[in-house]
Image (cartoon, rainbow, N blue to C red):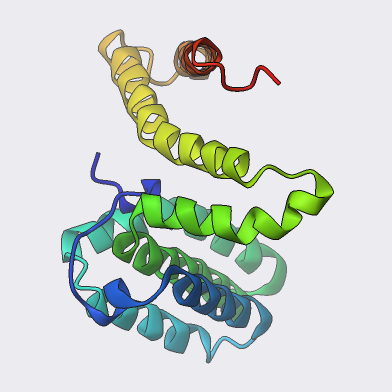
Length: 203
């Protein structure tokens, strides 16, 4: 799978690659908050330029940038059209550009951070919650399983879609959704059985 938004990492030695995970997460949170809070159509293109510069600084291939942007493009178009219908063209343009900026900001983090680094950092951050009964290792395992399941789920979605198209049923939602849900649930049961066989979750 080559979808960076699904958690795959692009190896490199850029400034963003060398930054600590905590700094990158805080930076992403601050940038995302600014994009959401600043309600000005004039600021939206500036945020988009900033996120494009971050992707360039991380040396993410243009093809990967396009794939990541394409992933949120449909949502951005739909949200922009709704905003245009309710509030006009300026609000629609702002919403469209802001959603693209948020997607590219997440791409900069995902492309420069290994999944294991994120999971280890999350386990460290969750340690103070032990006093509340939270198991940091279990939290990290849950996140790791979720991230690991995303590429498989995307693959299942594509395979199910292709199978429906081969049968000439690509316009029938039930021909796609029903097999997709069944396969995803079956995969979840298989993962649960594998964890149970290793004694994880028995307590």
